[in-house]
Structure formats: C-alpha cells, structure tokens
Image (cartoon, rainbow, N blue to C red; front, side):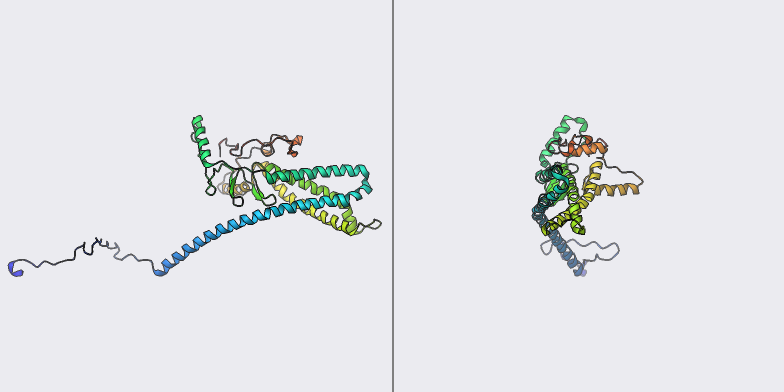
Length: 354
C-alpha cells in the first residue's frame, strides 16, 4: 500500500497464458500494418490454379487422342496409297498397254512395260522398307551413362565431355539430333518428322528409303503420265478420226492421269525440299531451329552455319551410304551399302561432339 512506502504492482497477463507462446508483431516501419489478400484475390488465384490444372490435363488427353487418331489413320493411308498404285497399274495393263501396241508394236510394249515394272518394284520396295524399318531407338539412360563413364576413363583428354541428356518423357538417353515423337511415344534418332503415309517416323535408319521412295514414286508418276497422255488427250478433246475407247477405259485413263499429275506436282515440292535438306545435312526439325538461330545471329552481326554441314558430297554420303553419286548405285537400296554410323554421334565442323 502507499502508506507502507510501496507502490501498487500492476498484474499483467503472462505471455504463456493460453497454453502457448504468442509473439508480438513487430510494428511496420512505415507505421502501417501489412495488408492481407482479399477474399476475391484468393478466389481468383484458386480459380486460375484449377483452370491451369484442367488445361494441362486437357492437353495430355488431346495428345493421347491425337496419337491414337494418327495410329488409326496411318494404316488407312497406307491402304489408300497401295490402292492408288494398284489402280494405276491395272489401268496400264488393261487399257493403256493394248493402245500402246497399236502404235509402238510388241517391242515397244516390252520395253515400256519393263521400265514401268522396274519403277513400280523399286517404289514398292522402298515404301515397304520405310514402313517396317525402325528409324532408330536411343539406348537406356543408365546404359548411356555407363558408356560415358568408360569413355572418360579410357580417354582422359575427353574428361570434359558433356554427360548424356535424358528425355523427360520416355526417360531414355537423348543424344544429339534425337527428338521425342508424341505419336510413337518414343525418342527417334535423327528424327525428321512423323509421316502418316508410312505410319512411322522418318529417322536415321529409314531416311534413305523414304527419300528413294519419293524419288521412284515421282518417276513412276511421270512415266504413267507420259504413257496416259496420248489416250487422255484423244478422249478428253475427242480428236476426229480416232476410234473412241470404251467408257470404262476413258474413265480409268483420265482418272489415272489426273492422279499421277497431282502426285507428281506434290512430290516435286516435297522432294525438292528434302533434296535441299540432304545436301545441307539438316532434318525438318533442325531446319526450323536453324532458321531461328540464323535470324538471331544476323541481328547480332554474326554468321551462323549448320555445324553438321560438311559439304554436299559428304552430306550425301552420310544419308545414302558410301556410294558415289556418279555411279548411281545408291538408287538401288537393295544393292547399295547402307550409311555408316550408329545415329548417336555425328561429325561436325567444330570437331566437337555437339
């Protein structure tokens, strides 16, 4: 009490009251308390997060659906291609060949038919090899790491070599020029593109067959168009003094001629593009990336060149094997030597494994 010379003691609540310690909030340096996110802000964030998750799931489902559709569409397109080839061949032997005998004789029929059979047989052979040849599968990542460790131990000067990359989707090793195909659901060595007409990817091991298939198909279409041109002209313009063919013959020849010309025009564009890719040692995917890098280098005042471009001759041999161009043996894929290499490493201008 104040009478005894003592001041009254104020009883304050303990910090431990309520069974737990409560830390006092430090005052804001500016003298203002931190604002809590409002209810609308939290709700918007939750909605955005849910929409993002649903979009990711939708994209995954769409990719799976697209791969399924492409796998179903592939055999249908293969049957369509074989059906068109059979239809044109049937038209030649049933309707065009007899007409050819009236003008060229038996010797002309024999020579023309032999040339046509040579073109068609090579077209079908390369088409089958494009379909059934595996484009190239990279090794397992663990095996690639073991090979990398052995190479580093054997060659100490290569100790700074980069470790193998790993595909985030199929978990296999991802060497240079390798890409993952969303349709085949696997990585492909030196992947060019997925072609629905062969129901397969075009890669390291079947790119040669794919190019030869387009070449022989274009030559076959040009051959058929040349053979069908005269009866097509006579029946389309109805030349006087010439005996008209039957209705079925006219329809088959006119349809076959238009099919061959249409395919020839399409292959001229696609085949010309692949000729450029072969001579510059690029794939379709690398063509897009190199365009972007070339633009970036031009902006920086630099010059960019494809590191795998070793010159037209060596680029050609890398695709068609050690078969000189002038000897024409590379045209016969069943007789020529296959390209060398395993598809895991490629020589480059910098002499560095890129």
